[in-house]
Image (cartoon, rainbow, N blue to C red):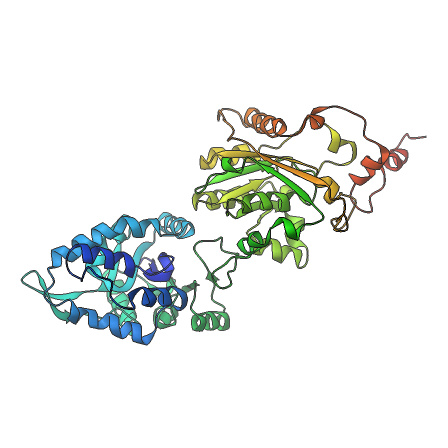
Length: 471
């Protein structure tokens, strides 16, 4: 026997309801009145927010009777016309998961209450192996007002899935199911691997009690959402200059950040404030970013949970594993922005003032794996806001805030022949975005060196005196 991955449609595979797209096309086919149906927009909006309700499903069931006399070919044509719009509404991580299940050899199944003739074109576009949907009775090419088989909702959906599983030799005990609705509880309970997607309030409670995974397909798996908003977007909404009186931001070149689709953001590393500065700049284009960060940050109490909730990707440099790059590539495949500091860590002491930026090849390798463009950002002045020898940023500099320069450049042209050569191209592009003083070689003062050492760290002179052979 084989296993399957069974996906609900509305608010699961799609961000919201499929109804508006179908309604528009049915009107174009002359099957519904051209004028807006009173309350139609409100019904769809309520569905988007709270999901299925018994009244809405009663109305959905009555659609079979309302469709009596409709020409089936016109309904099928409406489904074909709506498919491209609906396909564009499938979130990136849903597409990634479909690809993963397909690669693992599972059958892909769409299970939805919606009419079969309307949803089949979308299912084909997504590469589904089977469609379990409500079928309307037909006579002489027109609907006859009846339902042929199960009304695919609640227990009816489970019954239809069991019938399909039996005919396709699918083992539900090893299968996966994804839904937003408490009314899909029978199906979710029947499979070995249930997951609540964008769950309605009641399903959220059940999932928590049964310890089922809960996620949203428009953000990485570890990122929660509250009232439909992920934490990073909420922070970006708050990222206004008035809320940072202790920093003066100068931001340039944000038009180089793609408005949509994947991109790898690369920047130099000078301070713990760097991720906040990058997030501030990306807030200008209303796009969240997924940072690759050291495992020590993720392992820290509370801080690690916050970083994970913001969509961070954990990197254990000592392990040599490619798993972080795979997670980053998955985010890029879902159309996300991924940020990497090629230097790996903040340079210590004198090294912070070295005009030659030395980078690791992770960004170049990720670009080769994903084909995503690499967008450089030059950061300057962040070390004055949050020096490395301080455990917190200097939020008291309100009367004389330091200036942080954030300059975004055009995407870097990589050759793809050598990771080392492409890494040098990336670092050169970042350096070109820094002010002239950053490219001047000079001897930093003792105070500057001290600020560039970790908190509690011995000074460079102290360390030198302790080395073997020192006087």
